[in-house]
Image (cartoon, rainbow, N blue to C red):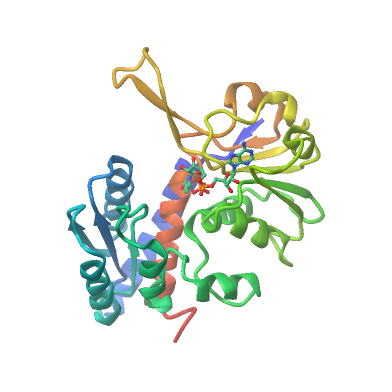
Length: 293
Ligand code: NAD
């Protein structure tokens, strides 16, 4: 079994991005600039946004954090989005989800200029991705694709079972892996909460992508010997042996499943770190106008 190490890989890619920034500086070009909008005090969101900002600093990108209280109105947030759309120095920005209940997430996502949508959530980017056109790919699936590519995981003709059909992970992952090219050319089964006999579906998989948000849900006897397992889940469970009283686990029962796999991502230290790195890769693309001129 080989670990798909998101920590090592994301550090490697970040070093490459930092080298790109040096080249841009030497040539007197524009430094990539990512902005992040955080509304409210959700602890997980605060951790994610801080890690995005810290990663920008680490590689020499410019970053801006726009932080607002949970009482911020939808109109105020839409005004912030408009300002970021109009700011020529900002190459890309994200609005961290989830938003407080009184704000319509769909409305906010639609208000983001798709040319700056480095999270890849806007329907223009989603539609272009589905048609195989150049697009900002959603950060988590993009990070997973990059991981498969850099670890030379064979995908052509493989049977991939994706668990979960969210717009940000499961559905785009199923589209990307079924697309022509590498990584891709998989035969994909997209499973969800209404799927009958999920273990039987997963047993057919050469590649499993678990994105459902239930701790340690995928068990050892669901997984075929030699399968590649990508665990997207980030779940906090109680753990009395830890000082914090809890720890993070994925959607896969790692200890049971890992010995059966050819490759598996750990949690933490797997897909999560690649998500942040993919966001940085998208921001560089936005700055270079690689997708939209
Ligand atoms: P979501 O909550 O939007 O969707 C969950 C999906 O799982 C749904 O499509 C649902 O049909 C399916 N599902 C729920 N119960 C099921 C069951 N019993 N059997 C089969 N399918 C079931 O999920 P999401 O936003 O895609 O997130 C999924 C997990 O991934 C969460 O743990 C989240 O924290 C994590 N996540 C991690 C990253 C990362 O960077 N690593 C990014 C996004 C999400």
